[in-house]
Length: 433
Image (cartoon, rainbow, N blue to C red; front, side, top):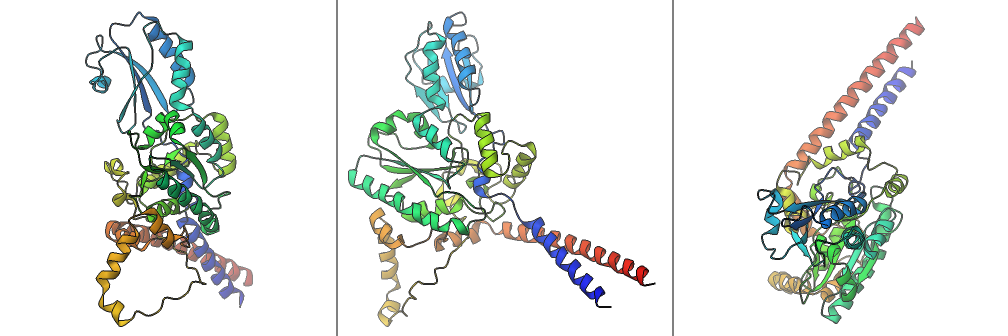
């Protein structure tokens, strides 16, 4: 007779296991960043006037077909005289000399390329120019590392040497912090972030890459950090120092290892890709190291389902990805260090002067050096308290939807377990009779 209760208990545990498996997500934010959901590519536009018969037209088409075969860039020739109503004509409004070539980003930002070409330029003349759009030393290093590392930290020097040193030191100190937090992430990641440091001369050779990321390329640029992960995706906004506080940098790194089914703003997962080459070999390497195929249609359909629901998935809101106030309240994971010294109770003088404490805290965030001294021992996996409050304010509907969905799945799993238990009882009764 004891077997009946044991069977019911087993059936109930089985139902709970099914419920947990049904509600868990097999992908992390980093995984999702490797999947291309048919996003709008970069456009390389050749503008001419009355040049249909020139060698340049055929040479441009031939070179582009060869160079962009495995790239997220498409090329097109537009003759402004022959096609006055062409939709790309708006990108040529500021051009005065022809032929001219411009690169258009998915968000419609335009970069005019200072190429020395003429109506007689050949395929061999154009090939090295087109290759600079999708290939460079930094992008080759990026593609070779992304499948093995948490993310890539791109540090770009500015005009102030002292700020450059402090920014680079901050990035270097963050790497071991991330390494300590890797074991707490939803899925194992082999290595911590990979650091790439660009001097001003190196940055000048990476103009297309830095432009695509939104890096300040002005005559006196600040010291900047751009974060990338997945298939060359931009992770959060470009950070400028000393203006941006260190917690923004640490917070962006903390996003990468989170589960894709959390209350995270979906725009973190599908930041714009840089123009790059991604061959079938690169896809095969990613499939082997990630344990799933980013190009599989079933995987893409599942990722699309994840992206198109939850906070930040509303149409039109993707344009605001660079607004830190909109995308930063995503950090909900927190690691507590047990060996920390407990804070001493506040004195009467401290209680009487809360405004002074707040003012001091604000001053500590004004520079990278002051913020570094406060955040040296802070784990990358810890959510900043200031990010938790906006999460409650902006994503009030998401937890309820997620909770209701989980309860529905658990109810279905429990019902299935009950049916299994009843069936087993019937079989036992027949055997006993």
